[in-house]
Image (cartoon, rainbow, N blue to C red; front, side, top):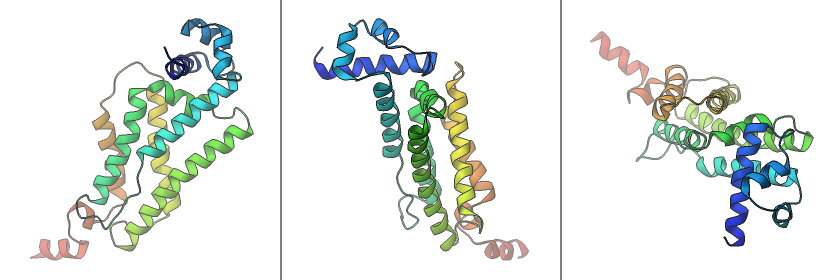
Length: 211
């Protein structure tokens, strides 16, 4: 292996060790034994256990951020609900493919120390802010019912986050598409207006029904 391949291998092994044993019980000896490298080789790439754990968390956060794009209600090729569905699917796919990442991000990194708490809060705030912007714009153009956009954003975040964490604790498989549909149904059923679901405003539907 070249240096980059070896580094990637150690990171991959560390991800499994942290997910299985937890941050506090995982040891560098566990990582090097499973990676079949010398302890000195580990220190060529990472300063200590915290350094490699930090890189795993940062990589996970970066992957989620890269998967999410801002919803544009003015797009004609994809509706807001299709864009939301795509975003949810992209995030769910990351953790369905690698459930160990969910354990690390949603459990092991939580409460580790104030620095990690700030890192995670900034990450969640960034995702929530993106959802809020989409909801506010949707409300402005009549696609979203009036309501507390910040609370709604946290609800969406909480639903997806808890599902992914629960998934990481279980070996049973999940239908990713079915999970995404369920999340969207919850949003679509309570927050979005008839304009999004049917293409017609509520007064148009009422008039049509009366006729």
